[in-house]
Image 1 (cartoon, one colour):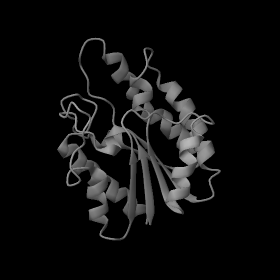
Image 2 (tube, rainbow, N blue to C red):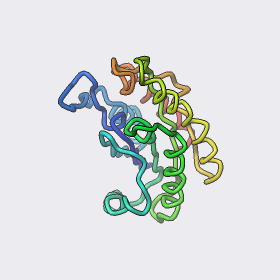
Image 3 (cartoon, rainbow, N blue to C red):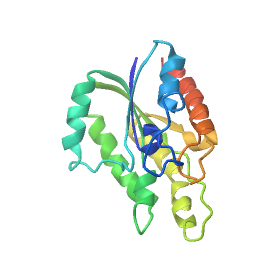
Image 4 (cartoon, one colour):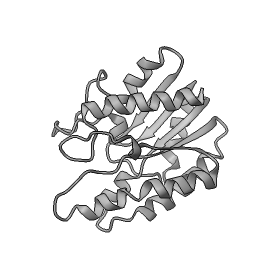
Length: 194
């Protein structure tokens, strides 16, 4: 089984304690832990990028097409995005992320080399600073919106916000323990799909 995880800094393995944008070592990152846990039963490709938003269709196809061609046949295209769509704006709006994800899922379903799509609602941010609550509140809306999209597009869905992933000090990026828990939870999801 080949699984491509398409995500943002939490898929990349960003270490919030590294002010230079570094990442946790492979022994910590959830995608690497997951690959090890699968013990050869799955080929895990982690395409994470700091700051990535849900691709705007058709504008962002130019970088997606080569990535998908290089990956070849994909059994599961797993997408966990939306956090940056809320955080990287002056007017946080989960519905805007939903609209982009709706178009992105429609586009993904036209790709002949993708057998199955898994939509992952990202864990909500845990931020309490003044002025940041409105951003955190919008991220908490994503699971319900994404569940509706999964039903509309008839794709697999998982709500990672229900996994209570421990965050680092910034409240947005997974802690080392968060990576461990996420890997174990995703392992169980993939076992059900195998």
